Amino acid sequence: MAPNDRTGAKVSTLAGSCLCGEVRFSVSGPFPMLYQCHCSLCRKQGGSVSNTGLIVVADNFRWISGEARVGQWQRSTGFRSHFCQVCGSTVPNMLRDTGFVWVPAGALDDDGPLEIGAQLFLGSKMRCDWPRSDGLQYETAPDLKVLIVILHGERQGQQ
Ligand SMILES: [Zn+2]
Ligand SMILES: [Zn+2]
Image 1 (cartoon, rainbow, N blue to C red):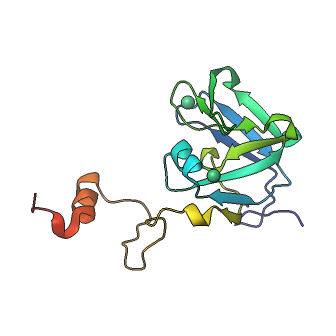
Image 2 (image 1 turned 135 degrees about the vertical axis):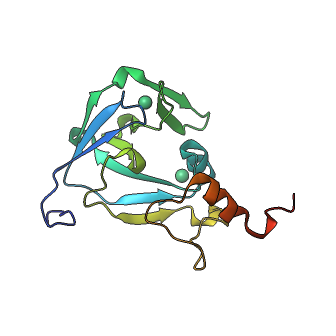
Image 3 (image 1 turned 30 degrees about the vertical axis):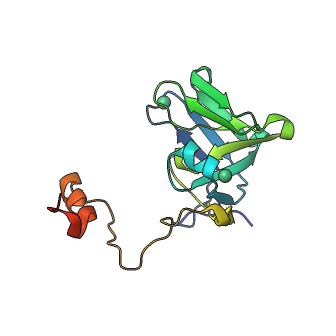
């Protein structure tokens, strides 16, 4: 079954880039499902409460530009982080000798037909990593000053 985007058209290639645009890459299908990891290492690496990634066959991955700008850091246990040395964004990395490449879902310019197929380290999940049913929801976002007032809620003005 070929993956389809929301309009029904086949999507065969997804483009990705870092925040500054120096690092660019593309991933071609067939696409595997994404996984979302809530472990403490992935949280620090991505700077958010969970990290969502795609593990693609190396032959389906291509650097478009900026590969020479990619810096890397490795923890003593082997956990690695690759990033754009210009803007600091997390970028793809080759999973050593596995023949696969890890691609951070957030670096993709469009999510195409992708969907999350597995949630990892739910036992390590931060307590706050759960959408509140009473939380405000926005298609975009309010002005930053307005958002700060909303998030401070009752406590605002008590400082
Ligand atoms: Zn960059
Ligand atoms: Zn993880």
